[in-house]
Image (cartoon, rainbow, N blue to C red; front, side, top):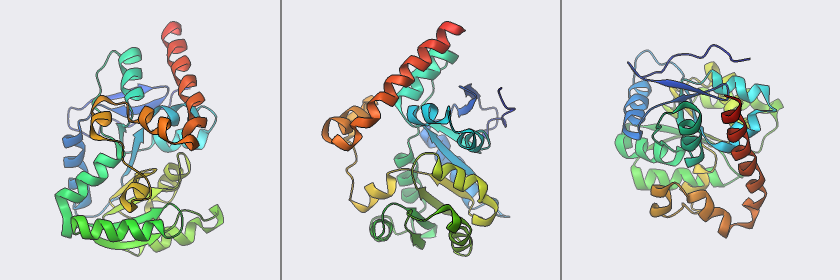
Length: 254
């Protein structure tokens, strides 16, 4: 059953529905403009951001809480080329990509020293390294750091820690589903104007994971590049195959 989704956050913008999930037709510059406005608006109000990729869609089919978190998100961008393809196939709409890494880097480049960032996620020690690199490269203020390896019983403690930091931007990197539901459930406690579930972005900022080459990102095939070099990602291939079958089945049904 399709939930009633909030409208597009952009004036006159378009919000699609893809497998009961929202997807905003928004370019990267438009998304950065909107997030920048949210971050420094008074009074402060929390906004959750989801960067939708095919794995999220497949995973959400068996995780109602993940679905609810994405349906309640204030902004949902197309992260992967698979999402763009699905929107074309099922909605007849061309959707620009605004991937998580590009959003995070773009906000840091634009706002630099005026931006307070909380780095939440990854293995112990990685968030600290990412914060140090971001402060050095972009001049951002580090509002705080915390690893992502804590039990759900500690969620309230961590949310309080983030809420007390005064961050404008929280980068939550705890894996698909976990990071989005955490951001949505605790959004009022977290308090930051922009909460982004950003997956491996903290690892990339820390230098513990490689960013795909620019040409693969331009063509939207960075996942294929990563899978080819990282055997740990090979178990994700069946999910993508399942996503293709899911889209094809939905297209036939329609």
